[in-house]
Amino acid sequence: MGLFAVGKGISTAMGFLLNLLLTRSTTTAAYGAYAYAWTLITIIEVFADLGSSKSVLRYMPDFKEDSENRSYILGLGYVTGVSTSLVIALGIYISAPVISSLTLNSSLFEDVLRVFALVLPFNSVGNVARESLRGSGHIDEHIIARQVIPPVLRVLTVGIGLVVGYSIIGLVATLVVAAAIAMVVAVAIATSHDLLQPSFTISRTGVNKFYRTAVPLAFRDIGTFLYSRVDVLMLGILLGANAVGIYNVPVLLAGVLSLPLTGINQLFPAVAGELFANDDRQTLQILHHVIVRWSFSTTVLIGAVIGIFRTDILALFGVKYVAGGTVLMLFILAYLIDSIAAGSAYVLMMSDHQWILFVNQWTFGIVNVTLNYVLIPRFGIQGAAIATVISYILMNMARIIELWYYEGIFPYSITLAKPILANIGALIAIRSTAAFLEGLTAIATGGIVGIIVFGVLLYGLGIEQQDREIFAQIRGAF
Image (cartoon, rainbow, N blue to C red; front, side):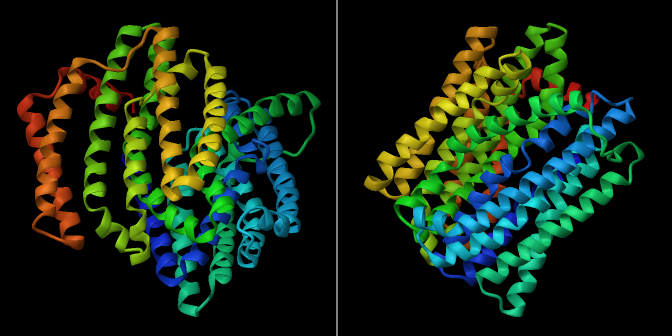
């Protein structure tokens, strides 16, 4: 858990620094073209390897003692990742003019997208290697290979490109170089383990089993992107590159609020899975109460700092990005809604309701597309944010109701009142700081004051015994 927190912190900081470098060194339109192409490639990457990395993750634990089948699965994952991603990358390269005409209608975007397409084969192979480490229990190496090395390389290569004087096209090319190096490192780390050596033999039964898992998982994740990132795609189609550039920065900043929930999700599934297997619903209910309390409390605290000092933070990227202040506030609301449903999706998955999750993702993905289509022409970038927030609210309400209906588990209790009161006090303290200080000093001081006030008030109100016991169990399990 400690290394995960460090890795996630490095990944987030490097992402922030990368976008800061790009926004400060390019025009809004150029940054918008980059952000739009990056979003497209990120979405395409979900199925560029035909789900091979996810299938590798799924079967690694099953073949823990079976080196032959493990090697076969790895070999099939690598071959699939290379072949399908190369075909898709070539298709993107050829069809870039058509994609551009249907979206940003920009020759700059067309060139950026063509260069970005080269990332797909490197990322696909690298993802198979990284997921093989995760699936085989080499968690520390997985974190280093996924959350530390790639983002650090991206910042380093772009930094070198800026020193040399590259334009946005050259800077994107440096990201391709970073992806290639990250892939080599990931494969080298994975193959350094005797049990992670790929085999390239062919078995019809193995192929059928592999793809029966891989393909549905890939299509499930496409639904996830529909309700989480389709706003950027539709902004490009309806408003152009400048709108995408201004919109992408607050989306990036609001993503920091996902850190508490992401950290909890590293621990919760394993503990909850064991409780569910033992049919210990009572402890699972208590555990769910605990993670919702702390997910919501920490997200509110981080959101308060970002929201109150939003103008100062956005100005770091350039004065023109301050226009994204309302979008940032709306996305803070979206992540707060997400935090109050913490763990619901995992419990549904563990209780064999994965098809409900699949239907949820696609249903609210379509809702998000529809809302974006209606609201963007009327409200601009704020319309895209409103559409996404509504989709988040509906998605999480559905998960909470489904979990209560199918499993009788409800994530809230009266114990949520204490951290809410502590957060109200912290919010007042942070807001008071903003009245006397400005800039980076205000941000840093406000954050520190908020944490101290929250901690003191929560301690004074009394930390729940359940929290102490559950976190002690989690630490013991890891």
